[in-house]
Image 1 (cartoon, rainbow, N blue to C red):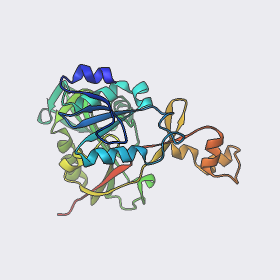
Image 2: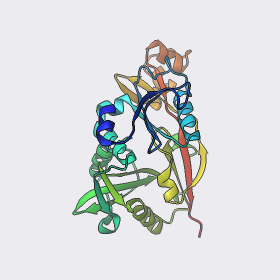
Image 3: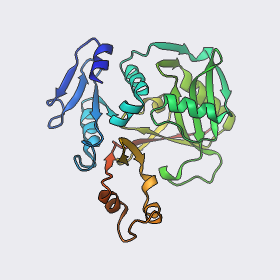
Length: 283
């Protein structure tokens, strides 16, 4: 990762700096851009080596100095390296391909296979099911995608109003900046679906919510760090290991989810939490 950033950034790079947010160390810091990168090895950054607020504390200390800290997780670098590299280039303002949104054609997409493939290949969090899928096409190729669905139970109280939505995903094709693309997609959704409100979340480990500020969302709150479990060099969603599932699989009813997982030597790893936003469509 250091080598890739060195190849892509030609001004000062500070490595393993222990002074900027003492007592913590920053793996890579670019003073000109006020951007820092951390490489988080899954074992060494798990609960047996780092406390639950470790990554959040580093993020906060950087924010106090006007620095954006980008956390790169080991499994993302191993298995989604092209997406990570594209994300890094975007942070460095070195995205190689630019398309003007006004030159694209907007379409609603019903082909779920196309949506799954695009998200898995271009979004760091991959595919998630959605009700509404809107894409921008350039020369008949999908280059930008925004998806919406009902507010998820995992993210708060599930909405019973069909006009309340959650923005689930937005991404461009790798190494491509579709200028004005997000606004074009969002305005189409507002115009055609007339939502009462839209909620969405920015992963604080990699985002400061700039997209949602541009789209005139209102900032609501900062959430506490979430955790995944580490298994076979992957971070897995904690909901796959709920106690009711573990008990069904034969584990001890009298032990907590965490006790069972610790006995299995499957450890938690915490992120920096989310930024929650809401768009109220008040006319």
